[in-house]
Image (cartoon, rainbow, N blue to C red; front, side):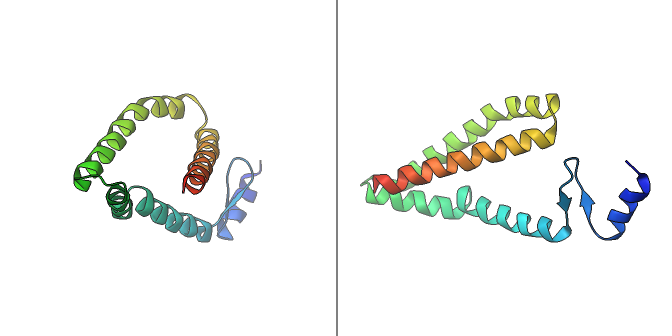
Amino acid sequence: SDPNAAMETLEQGRCIDRCGWPITPRWIYVLTILLWCTDAIATGTLFDVYINDLARRQGYPHPNEFIGIMESSRGITCLVVAVPLGFLFDRFDRLCVLRCAMICFGLTGALVLSISILSE
């Protein structure tokens, strides 16, 4: 590839990743906001409020204990998954691992959403 062509794309405010996809600052901002929203729902206080409400509807006598069990299991899962994911990122191309993780995360989310909709 021509180094001058790479400089032209940088001067226009656009970068090209290894696969030829354009990366603009606007997309980075949009994806960052989506990440913050997803994190707030999946792991933040909104998740704890949902678990508290779910425990109360199920008749659990101590909802805070139920939240503690859920948070502990999430922490243990993060510890168990950290080493294999670190190995994958060191062994293979990071972009490919991220794309595979994105697909797995999307399919898992769709599966959990469909199960929760069908169970109610």
